[in-house]
Amino acid sequence: MNVKSRIRMAAAVGAVALGLSLFAAPASADTPEFRQLVGVGSDTTQDVLNGLGEVVTDPNGTPDNQLIASYNATGSATVKTRAVNCVINRPNGSSAGIDALRNAILNNTGCIDFARSSRGPADTSTTKLTWIPFGKDAVTVAVRSDSALNTAPGLDLTTAQLRDIYTCVKTTHNGVALTPLLPQSGSGTRTFFLEKIGVTEAQLGTCVNGTVQEHDGTALDSAGDIAPYSIAQYIAQTTGVVTDRHGVTVLGKVNTVAPRNANGTLNTAFPYSRDVYNVVPTAKLTGGATPDADLIGAFVGGTSKVCAQSAVITAYGFGSLGTAGCGTTTLKGER
Image (cartoon, rainbow, N blue to C red; front, side):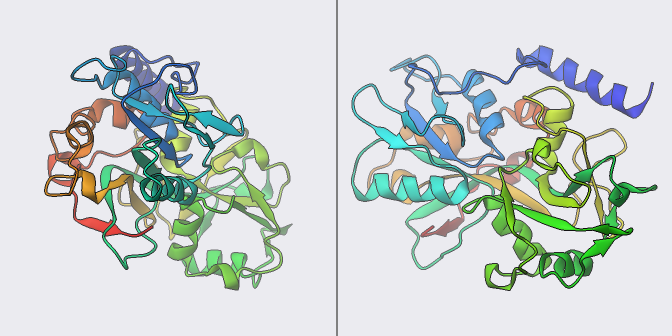
């Protein structure tokens, strides 16, 4: 049995056990069904939160038997998060989700309870928000499989080469003119990737003139295209756990390190690894001004409702943080 077959079989076993379809994304919260805890933001973690939303139950069954409603990063221009009022612009990406949560807190709207984020705090001037980790991801670069960039034994770039590509010092590779792409503004993956390769927004070269929706390989439509890609998203897409957007892309190595293990799972030792988070108002946690039992029970601690669903988290391609790392509340910031 080849590696691809083993990966798909493992995904199938996990999906069957969890009641997930291999050929259709789990139901998103973009329905008239309203739930107690509302989340928006990161494209990277939208699918796993949709999956968690289907298995994490509401203790009192009100307003629904499921506790978590997680609205996708893309779709209609607006979303309605509560039965009354709460029609908001759809936040696309970690920063947009965090800003939407901050706005909900500032204006006391009650429309959003948490933000999905694939980055840590960008501003630690206050402790208004808490970043609660629940899984491990990593980011590499993707190119088209039919491009000379993927010449055997496959793409393998150093951090220095990636820095040169995104500052336009290096403009060709394997004889191909490079067209470096980045996710949309506000993407946590964009922020994280640029930090890891040591490039600020101001240092981006003029050759980086295209933005794409993150983790959408179908957007890479020319031989020189290269873009950062969540390894967990790629695994979930190519094993059929979520809608497959990888197109004909393949993942590259960085500093000779492969993005996946031999069994197809996430290599948590990859150079550009990161935790992924649910961001909540600090005041709603234990010891805060207005503690929220549902929010605390869902996200806080290694035995919380989300952390207890490690099988769901790994089925979507993410690495487990274990009970010691999942659900911690030490990371705080403003946005």
